[in-house]
Amino acid sequence: MSTNDPDNDPLAARLRDALTSEAAMVTPSDDGLQQIRSGIDGRTQRPWWKHPATPALAAAVVLGVMAGGIAVFAGGDNKDDAIVGTTDSNTPSASSSESVQPEPSDPPATGTPTPVAVEGDVYVYYVMDDGQGPRLYREQRPNPGMDPVMAALTTMVTEPPLDIDYGSLWPKGTRLLDESVSGDTATVDLSKFPALGAEAEMFAVQELVYTVTANDTSVKKVKLLVDGKAPQSGHEDWSKPVARAPMMDVQGWIWLLAPTEDATTSSPVAIKGYGTAFEGTISWEVTKDGAKVAEGTAQGGSNGEFGEFSDTVELDPGTYEMRAFEASAEDGSPIHVDTKMFTVK
Image (cartoon, rainbow, N blue to C red; front, side, top):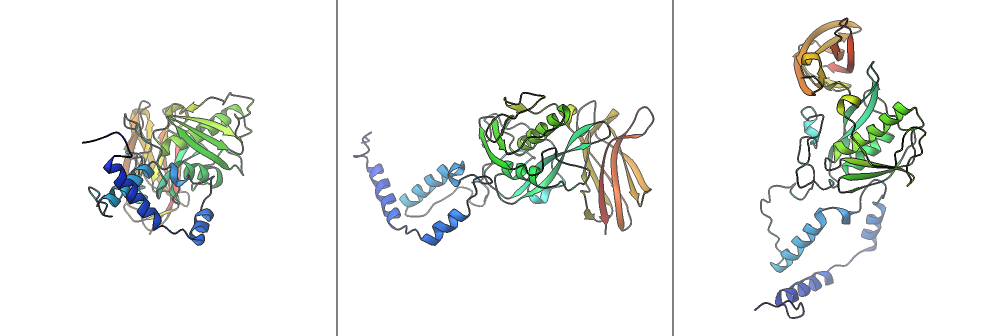
């Protein structure tokens, strides 16, 4: 016979006795407490108790105690089951840097929680003038093991891009003060705000928005704060959450994804990229010491739709520059150019 009175419920009594017994066996040490305190940095890592996996872990411990201290997990070989993250190709492992899609897909209809702290790669957006104006370009960077959004934002404002043609529009010395997510909106608090013209300021904000949303696909808008307050701008009102601007308006039209900047590779060299061009025709060429040694075309996206392109080229050992671009319909000159230096061993 069951009852709703917890004092008379045999299951509740067994839970209390088991937890009391387990708690009595725990003896905290001063050294352990000191290590925990020394490892906490509120600006770069969320507290463990905010991680979505914590309630499930606590429940598993209780069930394990009730079953005689043995916790049984279905599918125990899946070591990543306890990690909550995105489900699309935009959350890669460190070994998949050449095969991931540059743009995240939509999250599941049920929504995806903010990813917990895991090791792997993160995506960071920078800005480059491609000859037609400023555009956003993305690099894949290692995550030291913190929350992916925090890792990406910290990299964006503190580390230079790998490609020397790229740059960040955020002032030198900018620090990430805080980042949190509520529903589909992330709130990001930074220590500085760009003092730039209207166009550059807009691209700086989009650099941040694209970086956040690339690393947490449940986020659709970003509310920006500077020292806890709405940014002061002579151009725009940034007090409300900002969504991604259309890709055609702000994103680089042609990206080279492989070879990566300063990569060392073997021949034949794999050429991979992402972009859009007239009739989908993306041109590429390879130069060595300023002289052209190879060229070709590949099929990418067209009519404003972005798509992947790929090709291969046989090259002798040496250091080269790869260029991917669209040939102008007017005179055939290269436009929307992205370049990478690399070495063939």
